[in-house]
Length: 156
Image 1 (cartoon, helix red, strand yellow):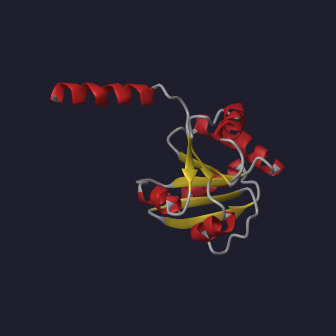
Image 2 (cartoon, helix red, strand yellow):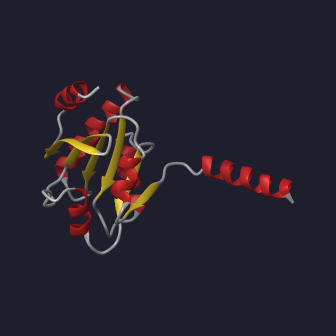
């Protein structure tokens, strides 16, 4: 019986290893779940398919993540009623498909934003530099690579 259980666990692990990129559902409590499990400074970026400036930022983040693979990025799409495949297609275009990615779920984008930051009214893109569960710096609008590098160097 133990051998069967062990075989099943190993099979499930191997299947999940080949499942490829995935986008997780971001609901109430997800923000705290994400920040509480981080051991290093990381950047959390909120974006949307309906946000033209977000594409400029995603393009920069794709280059940035290749150049600085040790810097943790977490991407969160605020598109509640969009398929995960559409989001994955955009992330793949910018070579971000293997980045930890989430998408808002539920029926209240406003509640999720309030849970993240009471001062956030929905402007996108929106980026947070987070260290030990605290928001260190917030950028509304397109995050420039030079500013991102400067922010990170201040907290390393």
